[in-house]
Length: 70
Image (cartoon, rainbow, N blue to C red; front, top):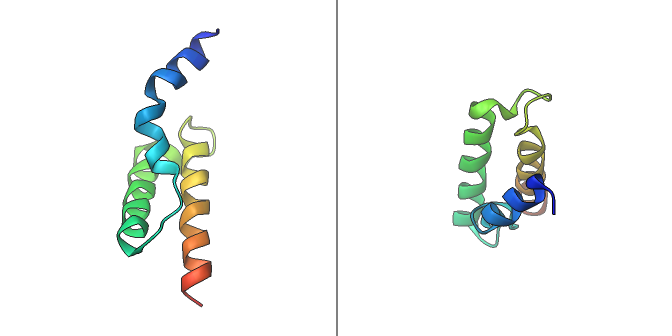
């Protein structure tokens, strides 16, 4: 296995909960807080390693808002 995959497998238990769709308002607020933190940590820059995580969190936030907020 390569080092990148080894690192992902090691840390996946911490990352996976961030990437679950919101089931309720509390989950939604947690997603928004996580997205804000990732953006503040550099994810707003498309060339930053956190940019793909920001995009994934943004998609989850957007899905919740589209389904619940006209």
